[in-house]
Image: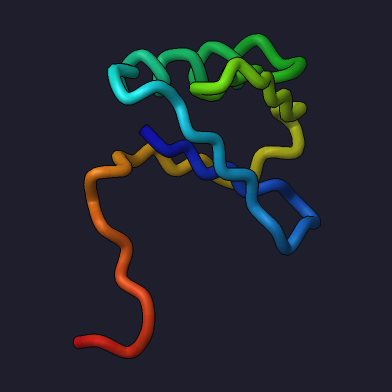
Length: 76
């Protein structure tokens, strides 16, 4: 599962690839809890690396699945 995080005042976004068996509803609940409590939202990717983003710097979060192929180019 892929999670894309937009950070305020930054043109780049973070992309974290979680384990394939990760439940998207559980990730959403984790994000909601982090937003309510403030502080830092932590995610651990499939290789065990941890990513932390201060919740006051979050612009958006996109929770998706790697099975969906991304379209590249000018295809219609």
